[in-house]
Image (cartoon, rainbow, N blue to C red; front, top):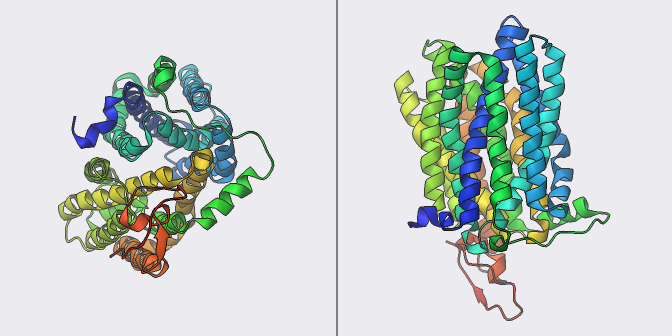
Length: 429
């Protein structure tokens, strides 16, 4: 089996990969169906209400992710993930019943969006930490990259499938199908072979565990560099739902729906980026180069002379984005102590997801004031700039220093925390 699919050698990971692909497709089905339901049934094409429902889904993630990471370090991953997947399946089932019975109200969607977001806040760090229980440490980066591939494959399949199902069967049945799809991880977790798992040491309940994770991240320069990079890029450079729509409609004169094609091109590049990352061990240099490539591609995207040039340039942009994101996620996971992984990944998710609501209004203002192209150009310049700044930061911190192998992720050397670990001076460049 090739290096790209090395994690597929492990039966428990195969169960999880297939289940994640099915459930991620279900996530996209739910997003499209819920947006369509709010837009066409509960309101008279009021896009602001769609935005509000989406915001309510993200609000609990921003508020509770850090505390959810504490749960991920305390509770066995299989049990916690079975509960979260049953929860999101139940939410879809309730929406489906409400739609089919014709009793739906807009405030129902507000409440269900908050519930769904709260479940996601718990599910995200638990899901990321659980990867380390499916494969040995040396295969974790590959497993993380393949998970990203599954998600973006679902991103290709899900929206198109949702449109087809809504046209043929209506909105209600889509939510019922969605509820069934969320049972795939529950079944996969039940089928897993306990003797082939790599369980983490669970952390007993104790005061100050959240503060401990913050102190830990602050003590790790490599993780701080990654989080600073991801925050800026996520805030200013990853607003494609908005910027693609602006470019398609105001610059190229296309119908509003045309930006859906752009999402497909972006997803193709994303899959190429995540599968490429699966072949390599994560290194800080790869992350910074990916961010610089992404920023450059985004600048070219903003300068596109035509709609189809914009679509084609979305492929390398997606490639750079996922090379950076997948490698960053994998490096943080593999270099974090196992007993803190849930909490650290919760902080990472908070930085990654929480940055977008902060940056989106600014990018929207730039697009309205200076034109759609500048909404993309600003993101590209910011992404390229932070990549260069973080590169200089890393060089200043590590260059010419005598360090333990564990403390030097810039060159991608395997961790070795033993007392007798060799010391040497390494030039990262």
